[in-house]
Length: 275
Image 1 (tube, helix red, strand yellow):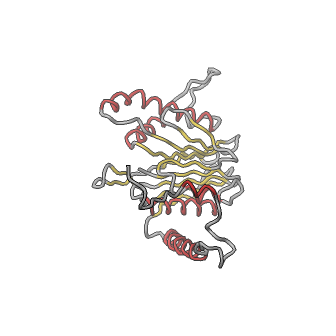
Image 2 (cartoon, one colour; image 1 turned 135 degrees about the vertical axis):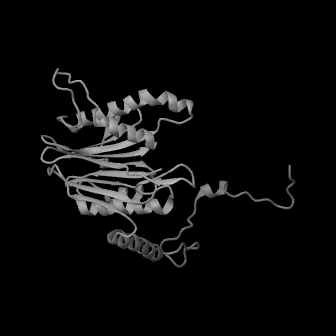
Image 3 (tube, one colour; image 1 turned 90 degrees about the horizontal axis):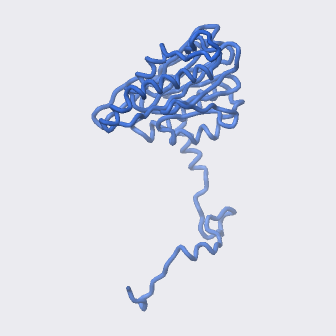
């Protein structure tokens, strides 16, 4: 499995992915799940992928050459000449469907699902930043102010911190820190997600980025963040009062009167006969 997340903010975009793939406990490998498409001054796009590795690698290769017919009869649309991120996402969707048309039947015969999900975001000159989540059918949805981030892969472990921290106004560095905490929480609870990590931070209207980093266990910032997060979580946990049942020594008793309790407990007496 894998874990990838992408965050769209007013200040820019944050992308983070792990690199672990596995086909059982004794077959663990490392493959990069992120690729950056950049033409400085014109466009900056990032693609993250999760799911079947052979499918996602095929899609990435075909995406480089995939073309869509221009409805106005102009030059065919590719990711390199698309005038909007929406059109670039349509090209990606077409690449997904092409791989499906080519491989889905054979995969099904081998009892393998056509399983792939992708995050695709960036900015093209002439419009604002956009972020999409792509599904196995080649259809996609777009991030909004109400839903400023997407996850694919093992999403559940890292979701709580994103929900509590991320808003469109979150600063880029804070969002990068939040994404790393989200990844750290995932790796703590799931062995199918692992290092090295790839992190990209893009500032709005730059159309290029030099904030790309590959993170391993020796990365000093990651080690500091990992240790601090674990320590601070324990401190916060210890600072919360233990539950008190009788309510005589606390203003926040756990047990309170409720009729619903009556249906919870069944009492058996020696006089009752077992049926």
